Image 1 (spheres, rainbow, N blue to C red):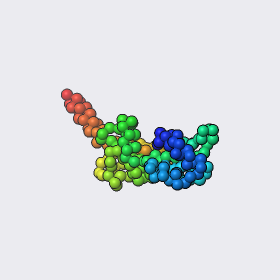
Image 2: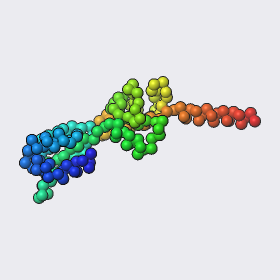
Image 3: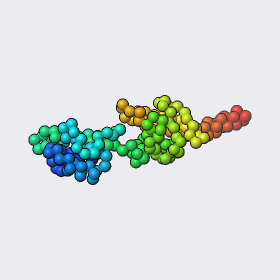
Image 4: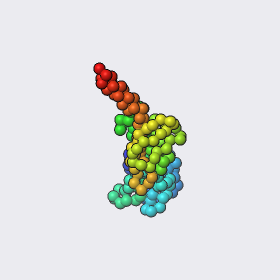
Length: 173
C-alpha cells in the first residue's frame, strides 16, 4: 500500500488532477487503481478515504507545495494474513487470523466460519471440537481489529502424554 501510494503521488496524472482539482481525471485514476482515495485540499475528489488500515502520501508540485494526498487502503484479506503468517513462522498446523471483535475477517490457513476469537489477549478456546491456545494483539489503534495466532493443543497434549508414559515406564524399571 505504501509503495502504491508513493507511485501514485509521483504520477504526473495524479499531481495534475489534484493541483487542478479535476474530479473527472481523479475518478479515472481511482477506477483504475484498487482501494484508493485522491484528496485535494480537504476535499475527496475520487475513491474513498475510509479504510480500517491505510497509507497516505502527500502529493507535491514542482515547487514543493502540497497539492493533495493519495490514500491507499490496506486490504485485510487472506493474502495479507498469509504473508504475516509466513513472516512470523506460523507452523502448518496452526493458524493466524485477523478478527474484528470476535468475528474472523481473514485467516491462514482457512478456519471454519464458526471460529470465534475470544476478546482476551491470550487463552484457550475450542473450535470445531478441538482445543487451541491463542494469543492476540491489536492490529490497528482505535479499532477492534486484532491479529491472533491459534495453535492446536493436540501436539502438546500428545507430547505430555508420551512423557508421562516414559516416566511411568522408567519408574517401573
